[in-house]
Amino acid sequence: DNKPDEDMDLQSSAIKSHDEGDWRAFRAKLVQNEKEQDERITSEIPNEGERSTASSHWAYDTDGFIERGSIVLSIPSSDPIANDIDALTNQCYRKAIVLVLDVKSDFIQGIILNRPTNIGVKEGMKLVRPGHGEVYENEIGSNVGKEEMGAAIIPHRWKVWFGGEVGGPFSDRPRVSCLHSVTSDVGKNVSEEVLPGILLTSFDGARAIIEAEGANPSDFWIFCGICGWETEAFYREMNEEGLWRVVSSDGGTILEELNMLRCEEEEEFAAQQTCDVDSDPRNAGLHTWEMLMDMIGKEDEAHESEYSFGDLMLKEWATKVLSFSLQEDRSFLMSDYI
Image (cartoon, rainbow, N blue to C red; front, top):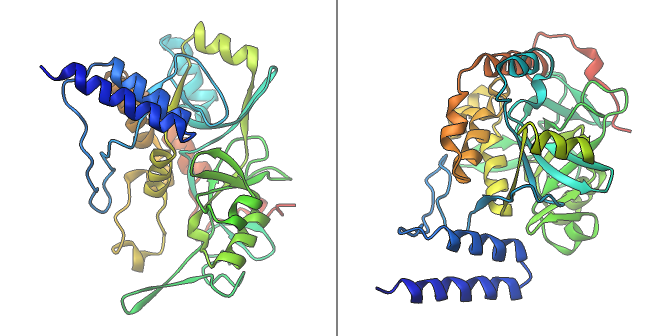
């Protein structure tokens, strides 16, 4: 039996990763080793539109340990009455995936990752509904706005994610931040690292990177709004009510899911892309939430509440709040970023 030798190889690999500075990966390898899995995950290159099964991608439950870069999963209440009340009054946080940006003794702050909208951004830094001047032919920077795809030219656009209710799209003063993975000197100078390979910058910072690096708006994820908890309330809700689960994940997994959530709405180009079902804002990112629950071994728990009243109410909320038709007149979205 070569199992002890294999375990030593895993330990050596983990220590090497730790020496290189990625201690989250080191901790993940130890967790993986403790599970004593008989089958090893093999590295595979995913087909277009499929999620990777590469062994470099990982996620695990931290048993409540939270830090900058942690993922917080919203868990439906086990109390049927409380669950139904939340379904009617607190839909936007149901089965949310929150990327933690700041942890302090009295407050925890983050952005929701799995709530894409079809809201765009136009010149003058304004949020607009589809078909009302969002940046399809972006003139910010000489290299922005067009990408050769065979004989066709595919325009890029700034697509907005709903990051939370505080400073969200309906706020008089939206709070905007951009995630990206541009690790050039310019990218690092105007950004803060959230996870290895994932950086956070402002909208102005994103434009500066585009102008300097020749990147495109599609290299960024724009989040409008933040969410947060009082630290004491968060731990009470997590430990006593089971409403939150803290997960540590590699940056590649998060970027892969964000890419799967991105999909251009232009009908003439839709057939050329393979997008996840959650790229439709009306699906409220439920598939992505289920995927992360699967990764941490909670697939049974995830599927117990599938198609529940709470999920249906969440989709109704997402259809009303995150998805806009060409004919809708919602001028209150035309709010300046600054």
